[in-house]
Image (spheres, rainbow, N blue to C red):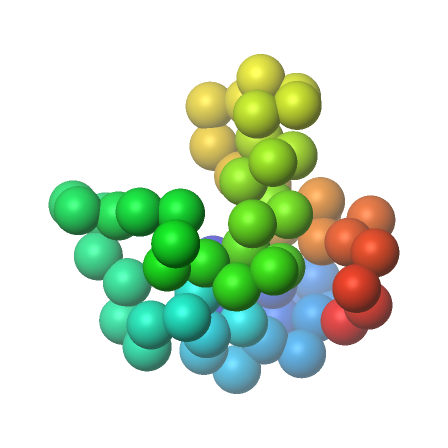
Length: 65
């Protein structure tokens, strides 16, 4: 997702753009491992009843780039 975020023009340098840990793992993931941006994306996933998080939702993140 970092590459997708970069390609969309966001200043993501690594996973910590949305996570609090440097290398998040899919197994054992908890929402507590997300920073405010990541928590926003997770809430958008729930609101939109989407299967996966979409990078384009970052355009509407109220905290800026």
